[in-house]
Image 1 (cartoon, rainbow, N blue to C red):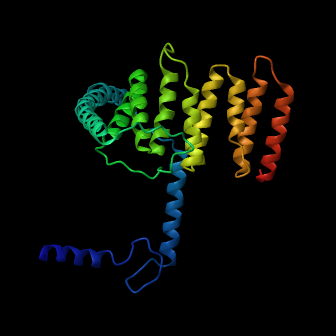
Image 2 (image 1 turned 135 degrees about the vertical axis):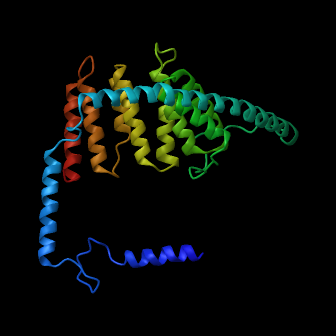
Length: 294
C-alpha cells in the first residue's frame, strides 16, 4: 500500500499539467516565443510527413521479408488455428446439441399435449434485444459458420447458418435469425458450381425482419443492396429493380434517391432495355435528391 501511494503521489506531482498545455500558469508554461517555435516545428513536421509517402524507406529486402512473414503466418499460424477452432466447435456442438435436443424432446413429450403451430414473421413479438451468453450453443454454431465462410468453405457455412437460423427462430431471437438468414443466402450464392439455387426468399425474410420487427433500416438496406447485386449478377434485373424500389419510403429522401437511381440502371441494363422506366425512375431519383438538398 505504501508503494502504491508513493507511485500515485509521484504521478500526481509529475503530471499536474500537460506538457503541451498553452495556458499560462504558475507551474511554468511556454512563453510567446516558445509557442511560435513549437508551432513552426509542428508545421514543418507536417510538411515532411505529407510529402513523404508511407513505406518509402523500405528496401526490396524488406518487401521480401514482409511477404515471407505474411505467408508463414497464414500457413503456419492462422489456418491451423482456424482448423483447430472449427474442430473444437464441432465436437462441442455435437455433445451439447445432442444433450439439449434429447432433454428438450423428452420434456416436450411429457409436458406438452399438442403441437404448437408455427408463427409467421408478422405475428412474432419483438425480441430483437435478446442476448445469448458467449458460450451458448447457438452462438457457437454462428461462430463456426463465420469461420467456414472466412476460409471460403461455403457449403459447410451454409449448413451451419441454416441450423443456427432454425435455433434462433425457435427462440424468437429475430435479430440473430435475420443475420443467419442473410449469411445463409450469401453462402448459397457463393458455393462453387451452384449446387442449389440462390434462396432469394431468405433475403426477403431478413429484410422484412430487419425493417418491421428490429426497426433497423440500415441492416435492411444492407440486405437489399447485397440481394440486388446477386440478382443482377444472375441477369435478374427486373427482380433487382423491384427489390430496390420496395425499400423506398418517405423517411429518407437521400436513401430513396439512391435506391431509385440503382433501380433505373437495372431497367436500362435488361436484355430488352426499358427506356421509359429508366427515364421515369431517374427523374424520381433526381426529385428525391433535390428534396434531400443534394
